[in-house]
Image (cartoon, rainbow, N blue to C red; front, side):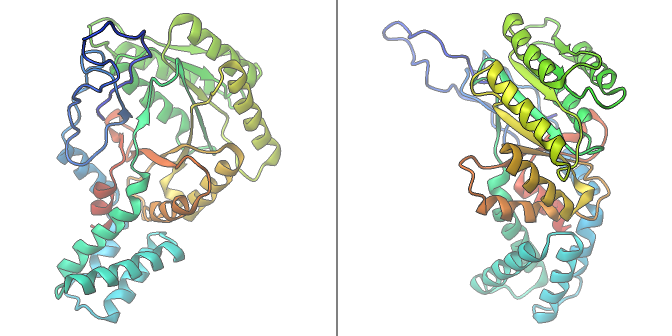
Length: 371
């Protein structure tokens, strides 16, 4: 389970001489170089951390999930000499992993420079340098999700059909609830049959399992309308969260292909409606992408970003995929993106279980991908 912290809501100016309210209190560091899932400036007493899953356990699952991606890259180093043939093998392996032509060329150029600078003479050293090169490329995607800057923090979740959007929302709601936050889910996917019921089941599961730090039962609530207008559901959900004191609103939306212009316009309408319900909302626009789709995932990211201005990604179903290299292509695209706010990979998933959703670490992913 990823560790969780929340920001403290703005408070009245403190009396003279006490410790400054704006100074962050020490926060328990995440294990390894993995970021906390939510950035925080709150005192630890106000937002205790959920005990994180042991990183070796998560890393083992991640490596197992990316085994098909990493095996081809690892085989290139078996008994290889450092020559042009090795780089050709790596080029083929990276392309097969769906890193794409541009990202593959970028990584190989960077790797050759690193090999020359380090004076590497063994294949094992080149493999370690490839991990370093991939980590550096992916590092800008490693950014924490911030909760608490606005009250409530509104998160809009989008994606194509079957990417795992509703399941990811349920897992995220559970983690937030375990961290002591009141979460309200907006069932704005009024098109798909049983979408409302599926989200309600996740809300009930998170509500029953979640426990506030103080020991009280955590609440995960839901606003839904059978066959209602999605924009109306979103508007009502934000207003309900304000009235009930909920700290997070997560809006589920109907899955759609980015090529369906009229459906993308509906998403833009939902985006505008959230802004009318609360100034500045949505504070996060998250795209859920299926890691099995390879380069098509990059096309989805580009299309949804052009329409809505994405702030983050949740990459699901990485278990068993041979196309995990697409994150390298996404990282290279994000580096050249002109939007003022960078896109982050907030979470990655390698299975259906609750603990199979974790915060993204560039080095961990690079280690698992290289094999």
